[in-house]
Length: 168
Image 1 (cartoon, rainbow, N blue to C red):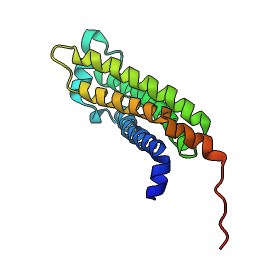
Image 2 (image 1 turned 120 degrees about the horizontal axis):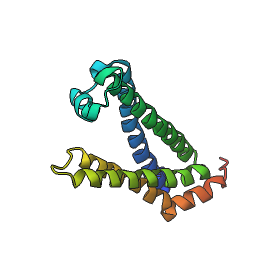
Image 3 (image 1 turned 90 degrees about the horizontal axis):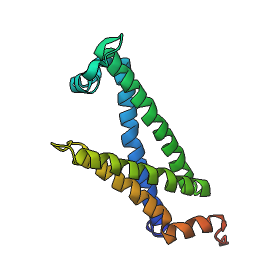
Image 4 (image 1 turned 120 degrees about the vertical axis):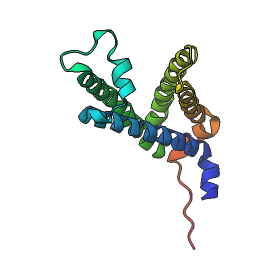
C-alpha cells in the first residue's frame, strides 16, 4: 500500500481532496433541495434578508421565494457535484480526459471561490463564511496543482504500460 502511494501519491492526493470537496458540496446540494421541499428547514435569516428585501416576495410570499431560491441553488450546486463526481471517477481510472477536465473545472471553481470570498472579506463587517470560501478556493487550486505536477503526468503516461508477470 505504501509503495502504491509513493508511486501514485500526487494523483491520490488530488483524488482525496476532490472527493472531499465533492462530498461537502453534495451535502449542501441535498440540504438545499430538502429546503425547497420543506421551507421550514430554511434559515429564517436567509428567508428574510436575502429574499424579502425590495419587494422580491412574488405571489407566493417570502417563504415561497426562499423555497424557489433554495431549489435553484440545490440544482446548480448538484450539477457541479455530479460533474465533479464524474471527474473523480475518471481520475481514479487514470483517464486523460479526467485530468484535463479536472484542471479546467477545479481551476475555474478555485478562481470563482477566491473572487466571491474577496467580496465577502472586503464587506463591512466581513462575512463570517468568507474564510470558508477562501479555504475552498485553496483546496480547488491544490487539486489543480497536484494534477499538473510531473509525477502525476508520469502516472498518466505510464498507465498503459503493464508490469512484467512473475512466474514462480
